[in-house]
Image (cartoon, rainbow, N blue to C red):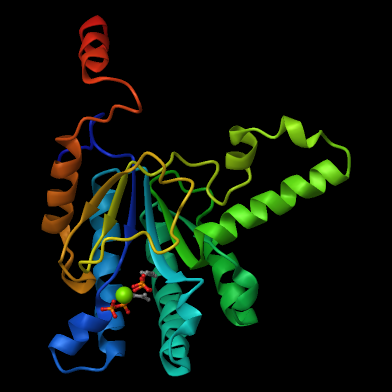
Length: 248
Ligand code: IPE
Ligand code: IPE
Ligand code: MG
């Protein structure tokens, strides 16, 4: 398989949506859709790692998803635990580093322990970084960064007027990783649902009607082809980019 070159994304962030509708289409309970969704995760992680992607971020559970029926929430938690238990060793074997982002304090102690253990097991791996956003919200992330900054200011570390974009970025959950350059949302909705708000400032957005359990390597290839065909101008003009290219 060909390696991902310079024009390929380094960091793909995905909102995995459509599990419930996938199950409904089959007259199955929503839970079956989530189970099929976990299979799709395993496959996409493998495909991305093989393609030597640097970072894959997956939105697994949002800070708003607690609003779902209690039974669905508890089934999702069970599934998360099971997936961690079954997959941690496999991730490690494949040299993948796992990072879980979000407010862990809302999770059961046993789930928190499993997360810490899986992260510790894989922390020195040098292949792809897999970021799983669980009880994550972009606003939560920004809020906790602001709290850190406010504490520093109150302790006299620096005046509030010194706060810069970089200082905010540095305090966000995945500050040490490249920002997502390709954002994918499956399941037909075209919204960000409080995912990585700050970090997606310059990402290319790709939406597909494909429901998450059906999202496979071929679907991912469509998204990356769309990405490579785009011109990323970062505020500059097309002519400037062509000039830069000629001088490179
Ligand atoms: C995404 O699928 C999975 C989670 C939010 C955990 P949904 O469960 O939102 O599926 P739809 O949108 O109802 O089809
Ligand atoms: C977003 O999906 C969150 C995850 C995929 C984990 P939702 O299905 O919860 O999003 P909304 O509520 O339709 O915006
Ligand atoms: Mg949904």
